[in-house]
Amino acid sequence: MRRSLVLFLVFLTTLLGAPTAQAAPGHQITYRSIPGVGGTALKAFVIEPTGIGSGPFPLLVMPSSWSVPNIEYVGAAAKLAKQSGYVVVSYTSRGFWDSGGQIDIAGPDTVGDVSKVIDWAVANVRADGTKVGVAGISYGGGQSLLAAAADKRVKAVAALSTWTDLARSLYPNTTVNKQAVDLLLTAGKLTGRPGPVLQEAEAAYRAGRFWEVVPISEGRSAAAKIDQINANGTAVMIGNAWNDGIFAPGQIADFYSRLTGPKRLMLSPGDHATAELFGAAGLPNEIWESTGRWFDRYVKGVANGIDSEQPVRLKPNNGGTWRTFGAWPAGATDTLQLDGKRIAAGWNTLADSGTILVSGALQGFLKIPTGVSLPLVDRNAAAVWTGPRYSGGVTLAGTPKLRLQVTPSAETTTLFAYLYEVGPLGLGALVTHKPVTVTGAGRTQTLDVELEPTVWNVGAGNRLALVIDTVDPRYSSESTRGSTVTFGPSSLTVPKA
Image 1 (tube, rainbow, N blue to C red):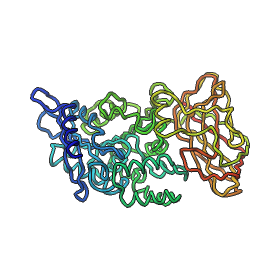
Image 2: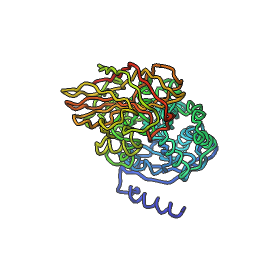
Image 3: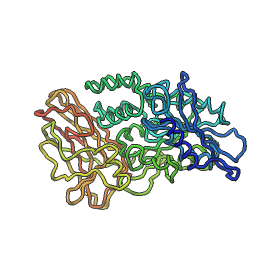
Image 4: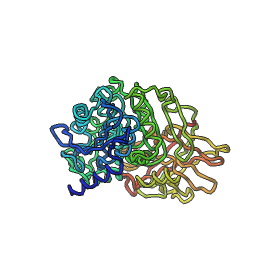
């Protein structure tokens, strides 16, 4: 195993270019062991610029994603070193692959490792401790935001496909995102060494007590530490996908709105990590291009104009060019009035949110949406409402909001709301969705539910349709067969660009 790794590193160095006397400017790559918190060995690729002097050079630290080794960012790092003169440290997060320690779910040791890597780079590889940025995808992005709160040396962050509120991501409206949790647990055990917190969280989940996991979220969520980030003045760029099946965009949009320092938000089609995947490998990519410009401005201090651009950049989920806004869109709205209905609970229908990593990727790469034939949705098990046709089309931009009057007959029922664009033949494309679990048998209550935000171009002559049922394969459902759900007069408000 160790010999294979050495051979692979030799191949990688050859592929990306070892320094030569003729290559100026260029870069060199070395494989290093860096002491993290408690002396835990963090295995890293260190990419340094060559042919541009003796430094010190601005530093970028890149913690790896969940279950992904340190090779993850080497392609992007090589470009950043060669073209922009950064020292980049791409390291395997604690508890995974070749690094030591145990997985603590972005706990204090994992976040502290970022600071330890900064210390090491300043002492060992000509890095400038006054010019530091941190970037990462998914787990690495979450660490980047948390490190920005903990370490004032971090001048700028690029957090991609990440979370800001862990509980809200994996337990939206007290509904377990089953596919996401299963994927993370399985990947963690296959590629790493789960620590006590992760082991206890899995035990609670397997026993159907996911609410016991929620208390660990706050200390591992940047949303709870936003005051520190704002006080530090960290420049924060966030990029996520509309259909991210693990860390949905609603929590990102809310976090972004609370930031007071320099900030940039990019939301585009795709699923978890797909929008920036190729950029991490060093291939052309809009998200990584913006990441490089972000660091040039806020780490190196280059006046490149990115701070004068409109910071909210949203690409329609079903195709089209980037739309830019000065702030999160909150313009005109349309409201669809929903009449009363009654459905049987506990039965699946043709309406569902798709499969994580698959459905969003199909939407992002091939523009194949999660679809439904609206006439075939069982009206006994799902409530269906349709709106008027948009004769000239319309662009939705923002967060659709549902005000729902509901009376469940069972003590606990899970509802799944789906918003579709529907054509003349009744074929629907999923625009957005959201689960919510409600308690209180026989009690009429009004729920305010925010669906996940979106930008979506509704075609001329098409209409919107709302479907609510009680089972979805992506999530754990608390609905009981034999029970019912009665909907009173309700409304759906959709934002328009």
